[in-house]
Image (tube, rainbow over all chains, first blue to last red; front, top):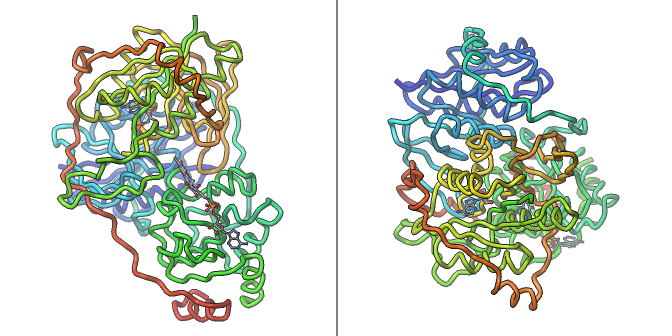
Length: 317
Length: 249
Ligand SMILES: Cc1cc2nc3c(=O)[nH]c(=O)nc-3n(C[C@H](O)[C@H](O)[C@H](O)COP(=O)(O)OP(=O)(O)OC[C@H]3O[C@@H](n4cnc5c(N)ncnc54)[C@H](O)[C@@H]3O)c2cc1C
Ligand SMILES: Nc1ncnc2c1ncn2[C@@H]1O[C@H](COP(=O)(O)O)[C@@H](O)[C@H]1O
C-alpha cells in the first residue's frame, strides 16, 4: 500500500501553492493514500487550507514554538519521525523543500529524488538533469522509503473541495525527535510588492541586462502592471543590481510556468531557458535577431526595447 | 589549526550545450570541456577569503571522481587551496554516498567549516550539503549569499524564494553557496606552476568502508520536448494582433 506524506510549505498562515501541486503529483500514483503534515507554531489556518485540498485523506499537525520558522535542521528530525508510517515522503522543490528534504532523507538513511516532473509508477519517475537539457527516467527501490521533491512547474495545483480529517501528531513527532538549538532564525527580508507572485502568476514580464540600470528596469514594472503580470529577471539583471534576487528566473532561480512570458532584453542562455520552458506562450523582444531566445519564442519581435516597451504599454491602453 | 573542506566536483562546463546520446544511455561527453562545478568555484573562493582574513589556517579541496578529476583539483590548488584529496571512484556516486565520503574525511581532518556548492550542474540534485549536515549532526546554511564569521558562530544570508533570509549557526557547520556569494578569482600562470608542487592525495573510494552502491537506477535519457517553431512579428501592432489571436490580451 502506497502511503504518501507531503510536507506542507507555508508562510504567514498561508499554505504555499506548491503544496497543492505536490498533492497533484501524489495523486498520479495509482491507489496512493495521501496525508499532509503541517509543522508550525500555530497550525490552525494552514491545516484547514490543507484539509480542503481534494485527494487528501488526513492532515497531521505538529505544533511547537521551535517550528515558527522553517529551519531545516529543526524540522528534519520531526519530519523523519512522522514519516515512519509512510512509503513516500514528498516536499516541493522550492528553496524550502530543497533545504529540508535531503536532510530528512539522510536522517532516514536513504537517498532522495529531486524535481519529479512526471510520475510513471509508484517507484518510477521522470526528472530533468543538465539544466533541463536531458530528461531521465529513474527507478527507486521498492524496499526503501522514497523521499523526493516535486517540481512545482510540472503540476497544476490540486482542486479544493476536500474535507480531510485534521489530527495532532505532536506526540509521535516530539517523542522521537531531538530538536537541535545550533541553528537560529535571525530575520527575513520579503519585500511586499503588491504584484502577483512570480511562481504562481499566470503572466510574467522579465527584464535582462539590456535594461542597463535599476531606474530603467522600472519600465518592466510598468509593462507588467498593464498586463497584470508578475516581474522576473535574468541573472545578469539581478547581479547588476537592476532587480531583486528573488526575481531571478532560471536554473538557479525560479522555474515558472505562466500562460504568458515576456522576455525583454534577455539573450536566452540555457540557464535562463530552463526556467521558462513550461510557459504556454513566450514573447521575446530583443534587438539581436540571432539571440537564442528567438529559438524558443512563440512570438518574436526584433528591435530596441526602449522604443518597443513604451509603445506596447501605450497600445495596451 | 582550523581547516576548511571544500567540495570540487568535475562537471561538463556550463557553456556546453549538452546533448543526449542517440541510444539514450547518457549524454555526450566525448571531447567535451569539463570544469569545476561553478558553485564549487564560488565555495573555494569563499574559503580562500576566509583564510586570507585569518578565519582559517588551511583550505583542503576534495573531489570524488575519476582519475582525470586531478585536473580540476590542480586548478583548485592554483586558485590557492593548500592541498587536495581525490577520492577515486570509477563511476558517479549519488549525493548520499558523496555525503558519507565527506563525513569520513571530516572525521579525519576535523574542519570547522565545510563549503560545498548548492548544486552540481550535471545532475542538478542540490542534496549533498544538506545530507552531510544531517549525518554530521551539525547546522546547514544552504544557498548562502553572505557569510559572516564571529566567535564560533556564523551569520549567513540565504537566497530563498521569498527574498533573503538570515540565520545564525554554531560552528562547525556546512555551508552551500549561491551564485552571488562572491566572484571567483582568476588563476595566474605562476600559481599553476606552484600548484604542481602542492600535495594531492589519492584515496580509493572502496577503502573508506562505506556503502558506495547507488539506490536509484537511471533507465534512460531523453532529449526534452522541443517547442514548436514560433512566428516573428515586425512591430508592436503585429505583436498585439498575435497576442489577441491567442486570447492573451
Ligand atoms: C551555474 C550558472 C547558473 C546560472 N543560472 C541562471 C539563472 O537561473 N537565470 C539566468 O537568467 N541566468 C543564469 N545564469 C547566467 C546565464 O548564463 C546568462 O549569463 C544570463 O542569463 C544572461 O542574462 P541576460 O540575457 O540578461 O544578459 P545578456 O546575455 O547580456 O543578454 C542581453 C540581451 O539584451 C539584448 N539587448 C541589448 N540592448 C537591447 C535593447 N536596447 N533592446 C533590446 N534588446 C537589447 C542583447 O541583444 C542581448 O541578447 C547562470 C549561469 C551559470 C554559470
Ligand atoms: N563527486 C563529488 N565530488 C566533490 N564534491 C561533490 C561531489 N558531489 C557533490 N559534491 C558537492 O556537493 C555539492 C552539491 O552537489 P549535488 O548535491 O550533487 O547537487 C556540489 O556543488 C559539490 O560541492
